[in-house]
Image 1 (cartoon, rainbow, N blue to C red):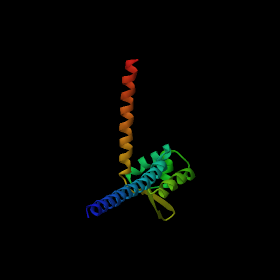
Image 2 (cartoon, rainbow, N blue to C red; image 1 turned 30 degrees about the horizontal axis):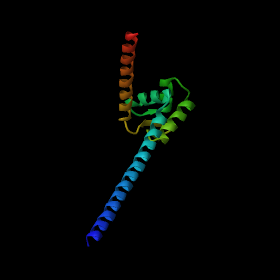
Image 3 (spheres, rainbow, N blue to C red; image 1 turned 90 degrees about the horizontal axis):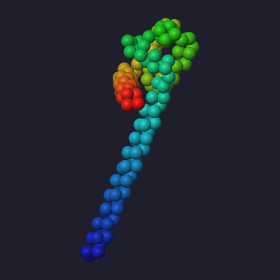
Image 4 (spheres, one colour; image 1 turned 45 degrees about the vertical axis):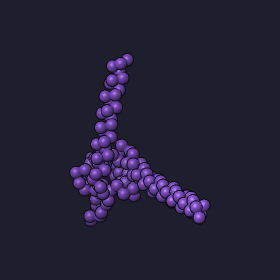
Length: 134
């Protein structure tokens, strides 16, 4: 009977361990999907004109013509950049007569740029320290 109990305990522990490993693998797959989606959003923002557009839209909804004028680019070029950000889920658009208006879908995206600015400031401080050592 003792051998049976040990064998049973052994198999239960293997099954439990297997379930833990499966759970870990599933978590990893979910994280991988999350990281992929996050990467798509960051990639969609990764252009100086798109960052300028996002900064301009922090004040609210704007039409393509105002956005183009503000950032100093052609409407067709601005429309292409807007389309990329709409497809990534960063912006949303709506028609108003002949105009298409754009706004930030999640204004908290601007916090990301505040964080980047903080990193840049820290990099400058670090470089100043390095320069002073030389």
